[in-house]
Length: 136
Image 1: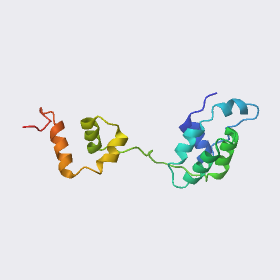
Image 2 (image 1 turned 90 degrees about the horizontal axis):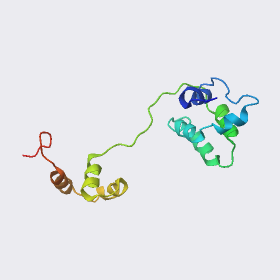
Image 3 (image 1 turned 90 degrees about the vertical axis):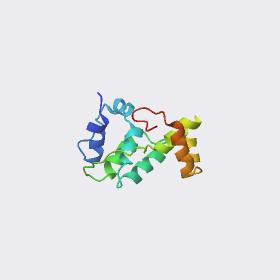
Image 4 (image 1 turned 180 degrees about the horizontal axis):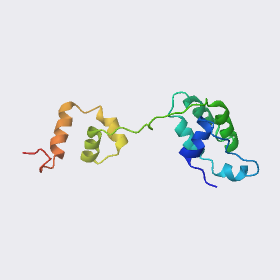
């Protein structure tokens, strides 16, 4: 018995499309409960972020069935649509990573220290030329 996160687990919790923990198969279903992914998905919505955070805080001491029950009974019935938040890519950060051969995290830290002239100098230094390289 396999459950899909977006077709069974989340609709069960958010839209109340059936209680998934059947009598007699609770232990088997408990092992397949994706608590991290459910908490992550519910944290994407404004009205469920606090509930997801609370379950996340207590997840070490709660069984998966108790986590599911908590969310099943407290999350309001509603259809929710949104795209997942993703990290934004920055050309400046990518240039710093390539030029100095450092991690993205360190590049983000030092990007505030560089002036516009420094960034422009990096851009010309990293320009490889060619048709789209804009090097004359």
